[in-house]
Length: 216
Image (cartoon, rainbow, N blue to C red; front, side):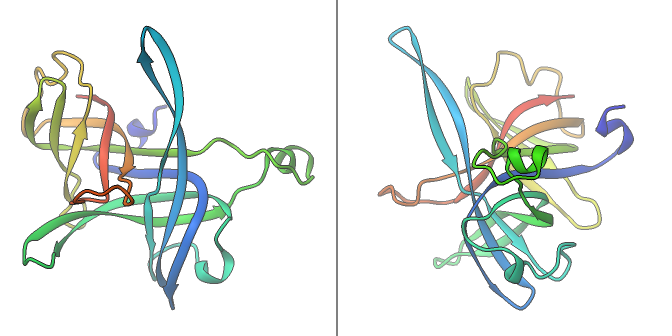
């Protein structure tokens, strides 16, 4: 049975597998930044060229995180597997403007074993491939057409708390939004995409929710 069939209603589930590039905090509160590389493909002069793009999602933990003692048990360079969820909050910037931020909260985090360790109980250097996936079952609160191939969806993922967020869908197939309207229930596969902070340009949102697939 599909996971969504077992959990009818709101689904807010994110999974990550990657390498810790930074971890900081105090007491029970802090953040972890993961490196999650992914293979990219593009056509150039009639040929497919593959490359690697690395996203660096920021994951938060606090007293409600199921995994305890994160600051003591994990460190930079650890390969980890994380279960998490998304929650928005409003942040006032230095100019007094309110900005909506998507925060990723850790539910559970575990050390990742190499493939040799998992199968033979011996140290190895090859680890499972990275993962950066977000699964949402929610309600459409708005649809905005940016271009013919870019749509922005406003999603209502409210459960116990108000939780509205934007998601961008790039390279949209023709007619994907036909028949979709405000109030419709949708299922979404997405990812967290981060910007390169070393680029010399103004950054409004460090990380955003990017839709990979959507179905009513």
